[in-house]
Length: 551
Image (tube, rainbow, N blue to C red; front, side, top):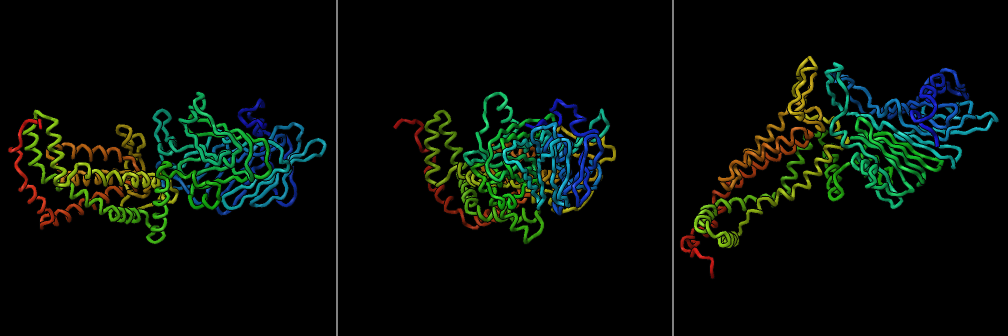
């Protein structure tokens, strides 16, 4: 099998071609790149992608050194607003290599155009090996002349981070682009095995592989893919191939990949966004690469994503879409909320009786529990009914979190740009409190990206205040008043670095819950719960019950 650059016995400089660089790129006729001659890089380009290639005379195959995705941009520097196209690869790139052959002395280019090229390797006897690459849409078709020739697909450094998170290195006195910390956790290898099941490997599972506590499912493999937070690189053979998947974790905590196959003639390489609709059209269950929640609730994430896309087609602002979605969810769960409100009011009405029971049977826990359950049963009350709506809504919350965290359509989606603030001009003074409150230096705009956390932490604070108000108004037991403050504060801290879209959803949902409670309470005061008071007043006093629990 081919020896990738960096792992060959040949010196690295010779491997990448210090004097044997990329083939020349003239058009029309075949061109030569002799060993020892300087050459220019090859570039293929269309409206979506711009790819740069490097090839060697003695080594069939090539390295893609750069993949620019024209439809998506990122910040050029930490403290600037200038944006550049997203690039997915470092210099080590993405390699497609055959077996090294020192008899191949000449590399020629044929059928050269803006979107295609044929690499031709010729040995001393004039025998040729050919690989044609054709760029169409977001895919690169790779066709080799020898269907039995083994190939190695290799991306040692993985995909580079694309999200704007910089850390200041005080020793180097410079900003280091490390990528969003949430992005690092989403680096994974996906593949579809011989059982046609889609599996994935993250850093933890790769560690288990090295310890022998896990095995990669056997092939033949239908496809193998690398993914980051929003983008993916997919190897898709024309038919399932026998091969070996070798994942790795780099020093920068990215996921690298080697896919060593025994043979095959045609392959498609996809470089682009993890767009659910695009990957669905490609088939082969490639849409499973898109992280939309765990297997149990993935269907819910898909539904939420489709609702978001439909609403955004009409509204054209994902911030407003999230507000409308919050209202829809509140309306859907309105019957359950009514059950919760009635349960809380019943519990409030029963508080005096419960206190009497606790005082009367404070030395007899068994009798206290029995009489308490009788009281609940008589009035159809239950402390657990108040938790039911929240428990049922948790799957929606998890699905929404997955969509906001991974959906490419929400990457860089703005809500409002009310103000722009330069926090500090000196990057050494960027704010980093307890390692989870991060306000970087430079120019920041409020809610300019719903997939990132609120840079000023205004939204989570408002969300926390709304949660406290809601807890105070719905508390049924005065003795638990401390918890009405602790829980909202805890939730606020947890939400600090969540996507701003999720913070917006929870804030709007809390406001709607407060409004709903006020309306329900007004209806109750007009006589909606009078029957409860009547039944409670007619109930025999607890003082008439015997203290003994014997019957």
